[in-house]
Length: 159
Image 1 (cartoon, rainbow, N blue to C red):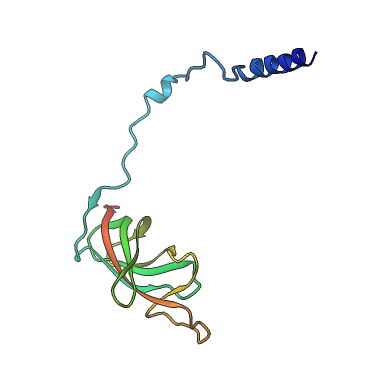
Image 2 (cartoon, helix red, strand yellow):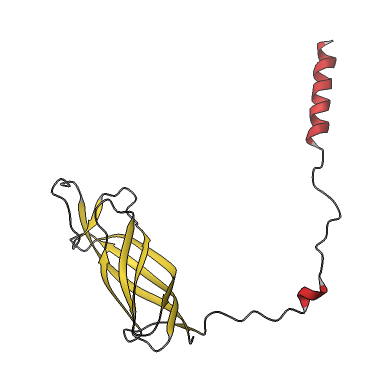
């Protein structure tokens, strides 16, 4: 009797496990209006590997226990910057690399203007501070660091 009960439970489990739950015969609709839609114009006119004559980065700051890093970016080129890709390298005071992070963010910066750019901090434990930032007298266990910011690519628009 037990064998029959066990075999019945196994048979029901196998039948339920093999049940197909996906729909068959589904196909995407093709709308004739969508195929005639005009091509989308790209947002960026130019993608540039910048030199020092197109963009300037200065004023980095990240206080102790901060979740954000900020710095100022000046557009020294003739076109509006729409996006900027950059790499931040973090060094201890002996110039040993601690971390490196690459970012690609929106930054609407007209020619000859400066904007503050902010990114999430690499310091998730909030135990580091930038050497030129203010530090409270109670933070004796905090570790200072220095940065280098290299602009990799800028995305410009003539608008």
